[in-house]
Length: 61
Image (cartoon, rainbow, N blue to C red):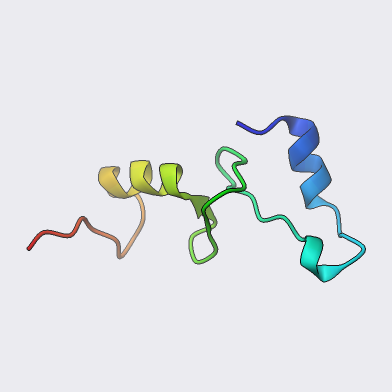
């Protein structure tokens, strides 16, 4: 998990637009961030398995 200092630093507006850091709203992780959901892959999987993300279900074929 990200520290509160890292989360606060990434919430500030950067000097250049390429320095924007997207973080998961649940845990603060910045790697493998899904913009459509605002979650990292780990939190996305946890919430999707429980069924808390509308429109997402586990694939089976």
